[in-house]
Length: 400
Ligand SMILES: Cc1ncc(COP(=O)(O)O)c(C=O)c1O
Image (tube, rainbow, N blue to C red):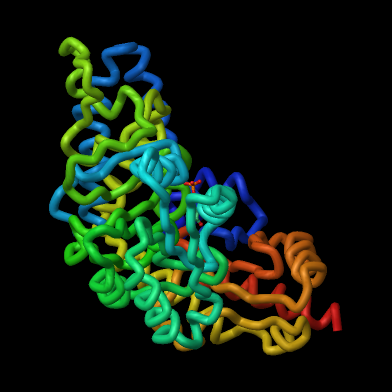
């Protein structure tokens, strides 16, 4: 099997999916081959140094991962980036800042990822916790309206304000300027948190103007291409003392006698937890060392993905959309959008049926309820897109 262009980085995953068209890069992005060697390097480091491996992890591996993330997001201070096995853990650690305070008010949107949605829904059962949800369902058609609604709610000075950079159930994205505008409506007592999971390493994001003002969550499972275990958070400078804390939050001081007060690192590490599998960080570093050495920036990846998306949209059979009564949830001009394109079916059954039918012809996509998501990535090329289009065409004809 030969792999042209960027496919050469992904031979193992492509071989693993031989004969299939994996268009779910937004769900589980393929990992470049170099991540396999990185995984083994982690094992070898452990065999060589056992508990002393942590010196290398804290001294080299974490700083390198912080530097890659800071470069990708155009941040000046890599030390303000903290890691956890996933972003949910970091968001709950953030919420733990409020334990013991009278009441908690949270402002969020209607289209947040399941972990946060579930967590907030559960917390809203507690009488002292007040949750306001602004509908972002119509964001694609009325960006100004949603931004104004958020600003109106922000004037009430909630304790926590949480929103996605790119909505997981549509791919519709806030621009850097829109996030900046919204952040200007955030009063000093409100903590603003951006869930950047579908933006990070996909949409070129410049956080330099927001550095020090917002928390930003992201991870390696998708476009970060390092897989599990690379949840991260960009933390504004401050003396943070989350109540949910573990010994890694004070790792640098462990050899000193433990004081009566719970100490915290004075940088992003204040939000660290406890022992975690660091192999994801090895994989993440290997992927971004590779892209750096190949001169493949997030901007270049984004341009490539947009070209694939445009090719897809140019050729998408009208019969597929009309025949299945699908509603595209993206602006056809694709001004500013995540790396997946979403189509909403009229019913859950129809969406399930289409996903199944596509699977039968070896086109792998994913689905969130009635919404079918087609994800694009470096390991696909235009020939793959043409094949998907052909199979969509056949599908539409057959089911009519
Ligand atoms: C918007 C968004 N946030 C976060 C996550 C991942 O969350 P966690 O790191 O808590 O598993 C996902 C995963 O699909 C997501 O789509």
